[in-house]
Length: 247
Image (tube, rainbow, N blue to C red; front, side, top):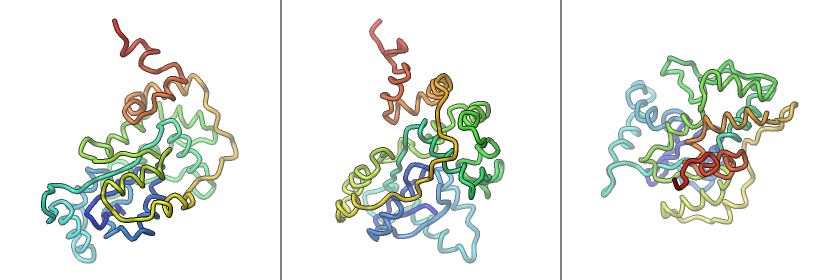
């Protein structure tokens, strides 16, 4: 469920971006007030949950969500929100490693067309393969630019802080300082990783042309979230494409 911090802030957990580690640290620091809605709820589903949570045993969660939407704190009209992204190309690698595990075996997550069974990665159901490049081709055939699209559900303009999985530790420390929490930064730095998937039996080696194709589909996300170096390595940086140069 989505973590609501004691200051009313909301941690939006994008899959495969280090969110389990972030949640663990927030718990260890005793900064979480409650959990509501879906673990990976994006902004729309977080607020949509207000109408989907049934009465009765989930009445407390319903009330908590009402309080989140209409905070009683002064000088604020909405909660502080933060999330983390990662290089879209390594996101695909991480998802492949995770789903290729025997205990996962490309299981389905959620169900398309059903709000009650929503999961952000449900569009990838049925696209698995023992071959990494075939998995990527399956995604491209169904949902080109999927990771950039998914990031757009979370990293909207109203989100106050967007960190990176590649600098997760320091970015978490940074956002906690922005929120003016008192905590031991060295404690955060000394914590072990959480939920790192083992290497699959078949190594991940991108087909170079496929990698360039996917990078083009994910171009907007890679530019927005700061992965120009990867684009440059593939000969796809704005200047290399003749974009953003003087006429």
